[in-house]
Image (tube, rainbow, N blue to C red):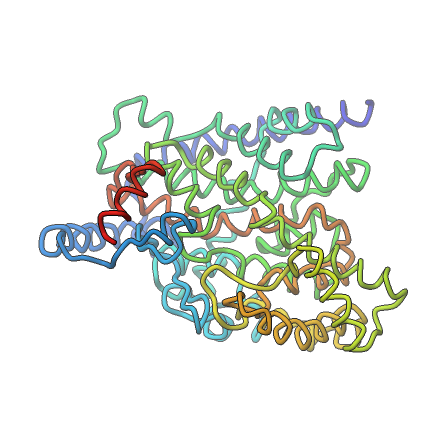
Length: 472
């Protein structure tokens, strides 16, 4: 208890310092922004009118254009394949995988600035790209890093809200609680209450989004240290970038781990708008709920076993293989037997398959390349490689699997485990921090483009049967 009282005192001091910073930030959207495009806000403000005109033209000239048919399979099958919303940041091609503003992951690795020449993309560079559609230079990325650090102060009551939960509460429950506590400082909520014009909704949304993204690592690291490391907090390092700082606050300072965290955040940032977490954020923000409320809802979707929770299930499954045989060094025949036993029990092979992709997930591939470079002899990595050889042919033979290939979750846990982050129960929090980089920019654009309240039409089961009877 004495320790937490001292932490509370420190938090109050940070909160007072942060309130002064927040006061300056809170009126920024009312000020004339700098013309320097090292400032992300200025870059975005120049783009908004152009995008607004594009949307206006689409509505006026092509509003009645049909985008496809809606089938019973789509209605009963999770709306898969149904084109239903606009998402600016990324798109997933079934064969090529994710493209961030048209750029593949290898292209991002080549063209986006890293912490050093030839390094993995800095998450700040990905954020700039997703929000503006433009490739930033190192000066712009460094400026954005500094801006995010300046916004990262956490109010004391956010820590208290988390502390009110049992330490045994799932990390995602604690994470969502922390985000909801931050909502008290929502600039959008204040601006809306003051009667801000609709055309300017995006400006306080930008402030909320940037504040939220900036503060997530400290909240997430606090939860990790609270649950797994006796509550000993590691402060932010003003010399580090976003990804490196997050790893540092968790308690990891191995340069390779810092570099992997940059890669992890970058590749988990966005995956178009139809996945559960992204779509949830878009849906919840559509009635003008602020970014904190929308992102908290997205985290609750991410926490599901069929979405973000899958990454922790993969490592548990891999560990179960090792426990079964007493070693990760097993033959392909032994592995095939184990996989067939898993499937015969009505269970799935975690980390394989995807709702859209029909090839190996490029996010898996870039993690594999990272592992080949930095940990080629790690026994668990070698087991993951062997699983990739064995699983697809088995799933293909079943005849019911559209995509037997590994997805992003099939690899990340082994890399995190190698660098010492062994608590797989926490992995979805890492995913949540990363997803803010994709969700946040879209929430800003939703307000800038005047996206309406989302309200699709539903049908009863009886009505669906009637419609089918008429068409047969």
